Amino acid sequence: VQLQASGGGLVQTGGSLRLSCAGSRRTFNTYVMGWFRQAPGKEREFVATISRSGVATSYADSVKGRFTISRDNAKNTVYLQMNSLKPEDTAVYYCAAFYGRLPSVTSQDINVYDHWGQGTLVTVSS
Image (cartoon, rainbow, N blue to C red; front, side, top):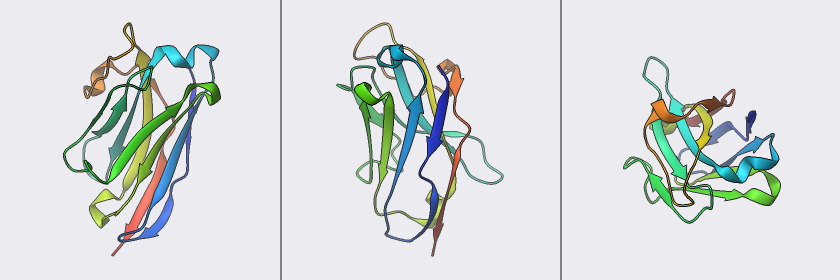
């Protein structure tokens, strides 16, 4: 599956953004989706994941309560709603996917994701 992320931009501290990631296949609903981010000089890190059915989600502690991942399988799209943004959220955000055998499977492990989008830059000004 090919992935195309969009929605990044410049926002002030406390603001909101919604990222989107569109998938290319009709079998999008068989893929577990995840969002990761990479700040300058840092390793890529997990942000959020959602099962192929959407029934299960998981978040990094740093974004829990502020970010929400969701998906619309009819539109082959996964979203990341980001609220109460902080300067430390500044990063390039990537969506990623791997085939999910079960409807409720998710993963925070970057190594299991084998499909990646190109990334979208989010900058939060202080």
